[in-house]
Image 1: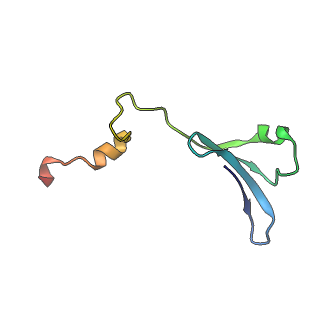
Image 2: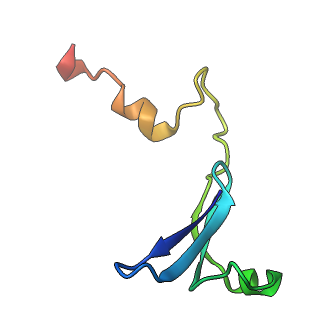
Image 3: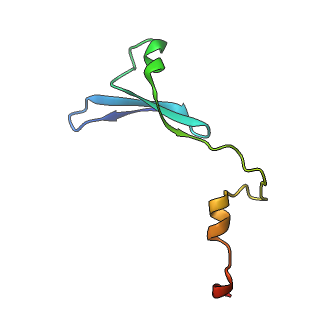
Amino acid sequence: VQGIVQDRHGKTVATLFGKWDESMHYVKGDCSGKDKDAFSEAHLLWRRNNSAKFTTRYNLTRFAITTNELTPGLK
């Protein structure tokens, strides 16, 4: 995935890139005409967490499982 963030005047203020299921990074400014070294200054925005030790049938996170748990007060 690759994209840009523009200000209200259309000037590129950041470049975003990564893989939607692994990690996303950004670099300040427009990197479209620069070489690969510009990406060495990238900042991490998001990284996928490691898989859970106890995977579920639908690969839910621990948080998702607890939000769907039926507590005794709800029974």
